[in-house]
Length: 311
Ligand code: PEP
Ligand code: MG
Image 1 (cartoon, helix red, strand yellow):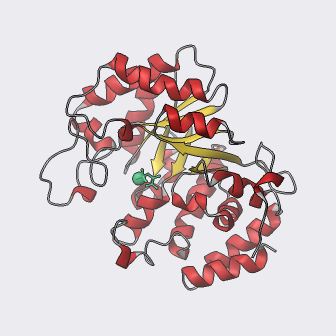
Image 2 (cartoon, helix red, strand yellow):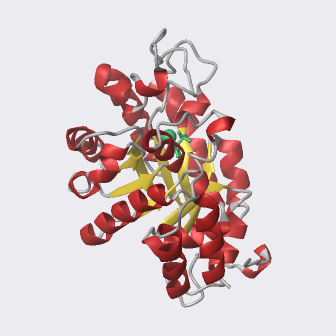
């Protein structure tokens, strides 16, 4: 198996033959962003805003939200920040936003669906993001979680553009992966959330340890969905990132690049090794590993087959 010293990688991220890949960090507040900024990452690939408000029963004002978001933008200097609108509900309940007593919250009104139900909630958050982005050196990209249809992508894309910001959506519901080409007509980038995409593709609760083989990000069916999204991004000439746990696994990161993904965002502590590993392999090796993993019978075989190509 390929090993690489984190120290051997220098940003910006790239394969050994110079194919550029953004190596980014997932953060949840200013403190996390300041830590991430000490590493070589090229920015934040996922700022989970709902995690700022887990203990709130009353929605913070636009000004208060803006102050919280600004901390992250400031910490990153001129590096890019992809901020995600509230993904409240299911595994991340929030007092002021989550619908109570849903029989099946993972399949309920969560993520962007809350904004569709209460448009003011979405508008106030986007106003706060726009306010925080004013005068910030960091390019601010704004994405919505749990988008299922082209109409939803269009609705969100128009709102973000109206505020002069760059819109994107997460691809974490299989319907969105299947229609990525159409969704990309309305937004400027997509980011694949492999945690939920595997949960929904395999009908397997991401929190259930007994189902962890089904939700293993090396599952060839999941990789096939990612390949499809990456192809749609390449055809549209728009970035396709991965910001789920899959992007924290250095070997899988190489496979994702081989599938056509243009950025990898993981915990800041994992990102340096992801970047270092990628810097040691060629794009062709990544593509061979991707083909081998796609053709494998299951996650263990996919790991093994990919490792044989990444030597
Ligand atoms: C995902 O679903 O992969 C993701 C990145 O979002 P979260 O883990 O916050 O649901
Ligand atoms: Mg998710």
